Image (tube, rainbow, N blue to C red):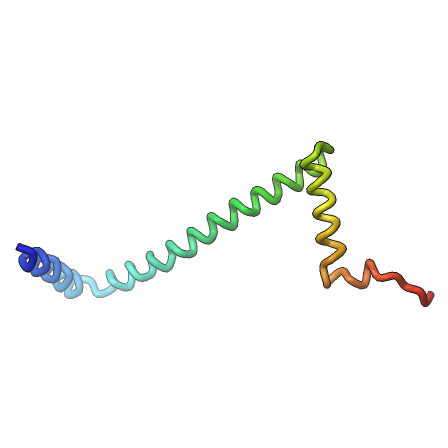
Length: 92
């Protein structure tokens, strides 16, 4: 019984390969697209949360807004790209 099922499945795959060889390439592309789609959804959600917190920190001065404003300024001050903006310059 089990070998009969495998025989039927393999026969269908062989016929499919003969009729349209691009089908397997299409399936491979869809599997790759699934990974990209999942990563895109994760990044969209994370960006949405970050933008929501930024909006809350600018419009509402409650505990979440104060904490997020403090955290954003801390991240900017400790970013190596902006290091020279926050250095003390003794030589003027």
